[in-house]
Length: 421
Image 1 (tube, rainbow, N blue to C red):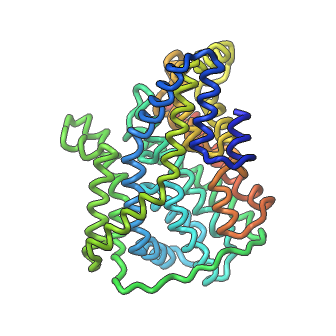
Image 2: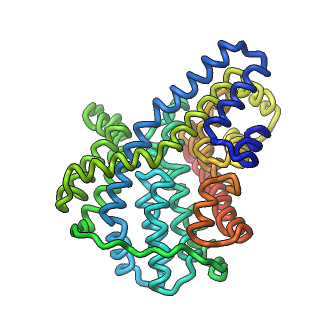
């Protein structure tokens, strides 16, 4: 762990290389043979990327279509009309949640931040006060809700977890977490000084998409995935198929291409360029997640999960709290909520098996823990600091506290739901 912090935060080494070096060193130092270490690293990279690459790429492609079409501006204007200028922070919290449902965090951030900053300038509002509610909802969708990479990986790797049930419970938990960390906490941040980036919306020759088209594209994948659990109970193979996250996102991409592209007069060749651009944007992230998978596999080969189980057998702590704490430590060390979630999945399996804890709540507990204390080794921290133009000190007392509030409220939500499941 110390080496990871040294390589990533101090030496600024590329995260994928950092994970490879630490995984190699840790495997050999623990007594694994050279061959076993290499096989574990290959298995970890292949297993992790094999399960989440389609999700990440399809989400990025949808995000690019949404960004190029200005669909978020259409939704934002509608919510401002409905809720009024006085409720803009609440409106942006809702927009962030809707946009964040199918889109990876960095994609959604780069899509939404210019909209927040330009809106704050137009209405003469403090940017942090307006931005934190939106950022809280984006973070919550990334940590709690499939088809985001970490929740998706957790559901597919924790025995007994169900995609639709985890999504439904995650939405329930998201509501109080979003209100507490975004809307209520955001009200205390009106006086934080900021010098945000300036954005001028580029003119576009194509007409803007309709509100219905914009909402449909963003909500379709979530609706299809949520439907999967009901389809299983109804024994409907077709609905189960279209509710698979990869299929749901593929269908949603098709809807985005038509409603946000062809329907607006955009040529296929231009959209192909957008899709290729989206893959280039997220390729470094995929490498990082592959490195995290290698690290997780080495820890599993070392039986670290069994050792954690032994240490916790005498503890009176709830297994869900233990999972939250493990994910929190990994988040603080690695700076990535997705890496923390993927790694914790491998470590928590023995505890999940021995305790009989609800696997859907275990996935959500890990997701909540992976949000704890985001700080200077987190790319999201620097995105926020640079775009919103705040100091490191003010970033820590706004962004970091917001992330930690949603992590704690998320855990409390999991513990409450445990009494009813």
